[in-house]
Length: 170
Ligand code: S3P
Image 1 (tube, rainbow, N blue to C red):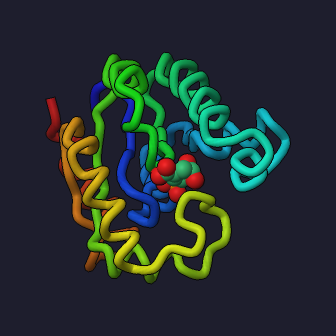
Image 2: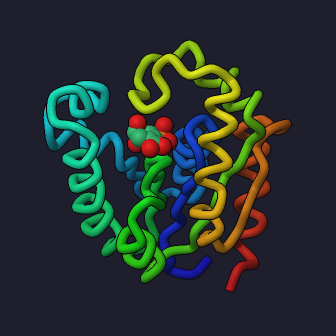
């Protein structure tokens, strides 16, 4: 495998963190999750950052974290779903990374995240709202080099697919 970072982007609930962890274990490399790094830095949850400081504050921190982590080499990086909202983030991640976008249909995303309470942007949303937000974001995710649909596959099988693709990737 080359020395590039493996960068996972995609909408909430597409499995970035779970699959990123599996891949990093299989490859024996370091795993970073941008949300986790932000929480560590602030000492409070993503929910609390949104409530107390607002989205702009979160996005600035996210860009700071992305800038720092993207300077690493041969690591796996799972990004928050909104990382694509800032072109600068993508430019930084692409410098030394293969960008993989995980996708899933709206129903699947909804089912995966409905019982979790840690995503401030989708609080109170129904499946139509989720579907609308996925569509709004769709264009932003086209910056990826590789796309993998996770709708019908287990995290392990997606991770294996992804590794197969990456191993033969230039
Ligand atoms: C967000 C996605 C979340 C988190 C924050 C905002 C988004 O990460 O960064 O709640 O704008 O899509 P996950 O995609 O890991 O849930």
